[in-house]
Amino acid sequence: MEQSEMKENAGKAAVDALIRDGVKVGLGTGSTAITVVQYIGLLLAQGKLKNISAVTTSLQTEMECEKWNIPTYSLNSRHIGGSLDVAIDGADQIDSHHFCVKGGGGALLMEKIVAYSSTIFALVVDETKLVEHLGLTFPVAVEVIPSARVSVCKALDRLQGKGVVRLAVRKAGPVITDHGNIILDTLFQQPIYPAVMEEEINCIPGVMENGLFAKKGPHVFVARADGTVEARDYPPQQS
Ligand code: 5RP
Image (cartoon, rainbow, N blue to C red; front, side):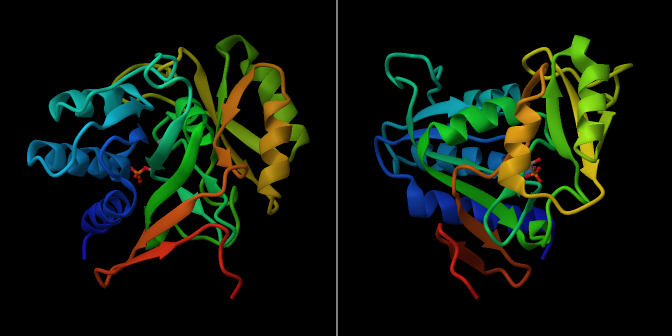
């Protein structure tokens, strides 16, 4: 089975399990999260789902919602009031504690705000995203105010991390996030404690947010190459 099919299977399983009429939902970013948007859009168009209110985590997701006529709101709007019933998002890597790294699509800032403002947080991944240790093979994205680029790099060094400016494709220079910042993709030489590192990075002046998600336990939907989807509740079962 292709990875794209696995992504779609994970997305559908999460929607079937968690999305009901009237739900206020946070919608993530990336190719897996977009399958969630598309499936919700389809169910709305077929009349199988009603009164969904969405908060998007990026321009990518907002544009996809427009395509599917999914009503979107600001998290600040009176209708949403700063909190959501459920957020569904993808991830770049996830460990056995359900800690994860996100931000491969550069949308980590709004993704974290939305995830941490939701009663239920769910991740949709294919099995290639499961790892033993975070931060070693897929970089932790650190969103930084552009004028703090060098000072944040130095501070990351002190945390044994090597931050590299993410460069744009089809535009000269760095990726500029939806919020006008740059991203330092940061790999670590040693295994990290995700919950501790998430806080330590965020204490560096100039850092807006980082892509370690260790403080909001997510349910996880893991799609496998054999076509099945495993729903893993939070907290994870000890094996
Ligand atoms: C975007 C993200 C994405 O969820 C993450 O990069 C996974 O993307 P994909 O589903 O395309 O593999 O965090 O900032």
